[in-house]
Picture 1 (cartoon, helix red, strand yellow):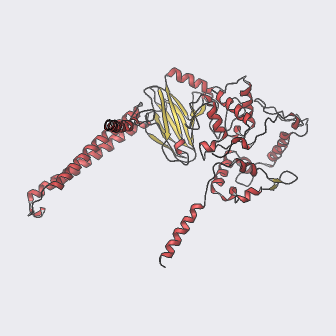
Picture 2: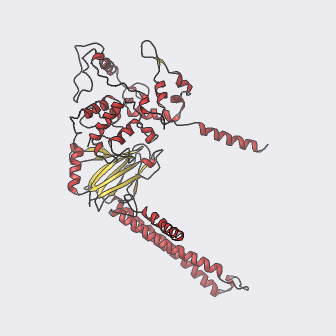
Picture 3: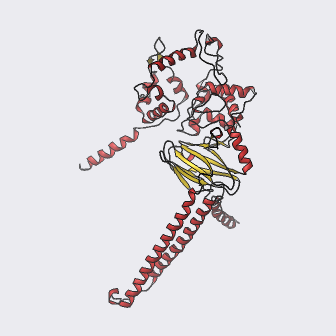
Length: 337
Length: 150
């Protein structure tokens, strides 16, 4: 009985390890053109390297186990053995050159897809900051542009051109299920193409160590059908919703009269700070603080009350608020759908 | 005896490890104590509170605090008036700003007033005074509301 339990436990370990390869952030569980070809590249390189490794180990074992003849003379004195040795070494060198060249050429063609989208495709700008992502959407007219943060919506089945800009240190934009990595380097505009073949939510993560909270610099790509995407963009373009709820109105007052408005913008109000994330529709985003907490009124209140405990070192200060103020300001932010 | 210089080099290098210790979350009592600035009777100049010296002047001696200060200087647009420490605003602008700033506190009524906000007012208009009676300051923030350090 005990033995069977141990065996079951042992079978669970590889299953658990493999389970880590699926889900909303995985270079193996792919749903975008670029990520699919990158996965092919991973498979081809892994398979080839496994065969090469097996051949090398087999050769090594044979060489170690083979019985040597005691009276073997120097190779140079035996033309037949010399020719055989030259062929073996030459063959191994040629195979190495062919394999490496094939890898180089195929990875060159695969990485070309990283920037497949052109000027005609949907273009968005993503800015990397310590430790969150600013997202800007453009339109055919200037009044159609809007800003959001840490959440990118894209239409399914279309190439999206993501222009990347680092504003403080080097970050890296990585949505493993949709595309490869691309760095955001201060002073050097970069871009990457993302494309989702299937609707869903894909997690992205900063992939270049950028300081204390690098691990908490996540974002989400929401791929949705064209109509849902258009509805989302129309909503995001709008100013913040006005409410008649007394607590929400009190919360807005707190937001505007306390230091919040110095750094954050809420379109439609006097708050137009440009330093922190745009909060016009913060209540409608899935997560706050770059993927740290799910958006709820409670998590908003916890974050405002003590940001340095939840995400030490981030640039949001602890603003002293009375309990009633905290309650109303969190109601206000949660209402901003 | 020959190992002495080597030991000295390692000790000197290790001493550098203490150069920069970041305190990312101030304890609420420290925040409250840091607000106890001893102001001059004109309420402009004064001297830092005792705790500031007890903590070894962390805002002048700590590289992290200094670079956060540099970040805030650029973020909050301080450069617009103060440039790189040599003055950026013109004489006329300084007079205009000083005139407006006096109306924010609004301790006395004026017949002249700046234009109204385009957005919703978050405070009584500048020419309605005395402000102390008109401001609904709401509940007083108390730092201890934020609880002890976890």
